[in-house]
Image (cartoon, rainbow, N blue to C red; front, side, top):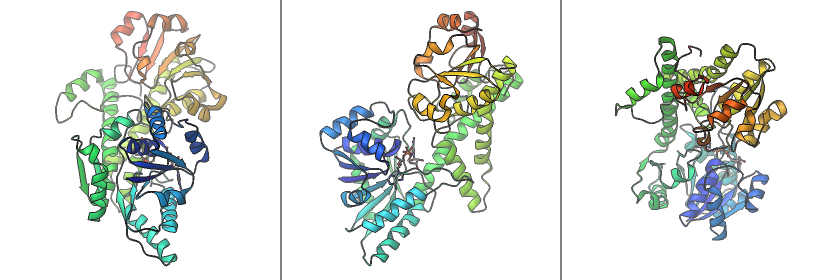
Length: 442
Ligand SMILES: NC(=O)c1ccc[n+]([C@@H]2O[C@H](COP(=O)([O-])OP(=O)(O)OC[C@H]3O[C@@H](n4cnc5c(N)ncnc54)[C@H](O)[C@@H]3O)[C@@H](O)[C@H]2O)c1
């Protein structure tokens, strides 16, 4: 099929490339000339494991092309995907200006019947209808009439596993109000669904809601276990033991219940806020969703509070940080808890030296020269009075503890992800402080 992907960020570039990998002819289009320039030179603007090889292969085999020309993208695809950002506005609602601007451009240039406009961006219920209206209004202005359908196809990929999630998804969700469009979408995903990955066909409103409900649920799991961790500290329980005990219940399950420094990234924070805002818009207070968000904001303070409580006055003290991205295997720093933690420590006068395997370029845009960055993880540690682990990159899981101890001024580790065992840390002689396993500071 001929596909145009408008918006070539974390979602658009991965989805576009995966559609090309499945044999489709894909034109990826973005207004960001720098991104398109990089892609045309064979460079990949984001870090995503396996993406570079897949883009190169599909460029070579001429199944993927790049452009900044939106009109060309509207002409090219029989399916026109919208994968632009939908950031949060002041009161949590999704800012749909990028989606609407693309819809307007589509309406200005559409000149063929039966094109399908597929919304992959995360958007509130009603957006498919609004996009339909914007395109129809533009067609009316031009005095032309073409049959088209706006479909919702929310994206559930996880950064860091995005390719696997796209080619082997837990599910594909299609919201389509027209049968002919639903049929084309089903055919598009057939190479994936025939391998046993389920497809759910529904109306656009249910499809749009599915994405927010999924992210709301996942974020709630994180806030829930973080509250349990904090309660564990108060009552002298160990959250890791509690976690094992509750996860053994099949109704609860083993996934996504890890205490830590709070969730971040480009999706959960804004999607939880948008879900709460959606409720408010209709006069419904989604208390649980709001509590998820409030709990998370508090949780982002927990690790820095532990550092301040343990170390006292940190003015002028050097502190080492491992991990900056909001989670491993991505360079994405959007709403990363590392930002809150580091800002709090900087405000108290700490001198921060940080290492992250891939997110340092993006982190530099946030912190500039206010913190130091090093290219090697152990180089952070020289003369530091503590090591803080914020992101659980795999190379931090089994480091050379003797080396850490010899380099640190004090053998002190604050672990925001509970990746080490307290017993082992005790054997090495570290003062080890983690989440929900003693300390009573949050
Ligand atoms: N990042 C994720 O893990 C993820 C996962 C699932 C869903 N989503 C959702 O997918 C959407 C995109 O997220 P993302 O992380 O890829 O965003 P992103 O910020 O990485 O990329 C968005 C891209 O859209 C481009 N853009 C904006 N306006 C444009 C226009 N008028 N024409 C062409 N291009 C335009 C931007 O230049 C940018 O490159 C959001 O709604 C997000 O919530 C993201």
